Image (cartoon, rainbow, N blue to C red; front, side, top):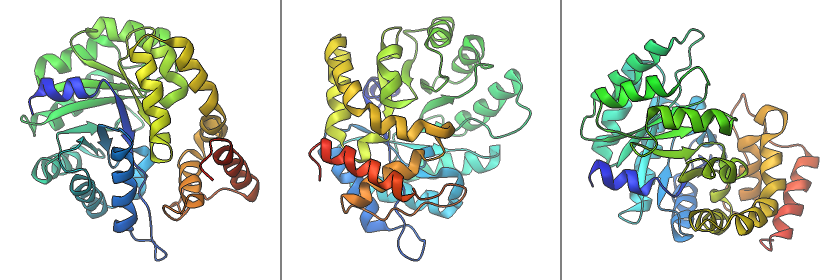
Length: 301
């Protein structure tokens, strides 16, 4: 697969998989593979293990590598795997090389977790990681408005394997400016705040969106993408309204229950345990009931 191939595939639903745990707290490999396989069976063509929905920052390096290998094995040649990597430069570089060995098609570099991130330092960080795997496609994950089109363009100039941007700043006007300053046609722009943000971002240039909902109901995410791709915004907004309650539960309280809502839904469907790792917590009984009501309204229970 060439860089262009993955760039084209990113114009789709990019599913961020959960990381199921067993009763002892370890990764439940069988459940993990089943969740991934179900997503791909439902029409998902790009899967990202070790994203935020996968509790990346609560996993050890060994666990992230194992999660990646489970994903690659479960997907086979049916979808592209884009592995989340991050932390310090050395750790991210080791993970990127492991992703290459495991058969991933690309990496998504998490926003650096550091209290002092300068725009130039952001470029240096990503250049170091991207340059360590020149044969792998690279997707940037932008979560701060302090990173603009100039920084993204400079990075793309330095690293031709940078093919896409997952943009997760909740401001479609800012997104429109950044994408055009960096080069709207130069990279694939992915709306990084899931289904609720997708219509607004598609209206100003995005061609794909990320999804945690795809763990639970991949067909809904795919239907919304197909409507947006066809320019059928009325149909897309009907689907937006259909999934709105679920996504608002995930976004509430500064997304405190983002992963917990998805895992609760999977637990009620019998697909994995509801367990999450600190600093996340499982839902209260009220939250569990709310998830159950939504799943019932979708005809899944």
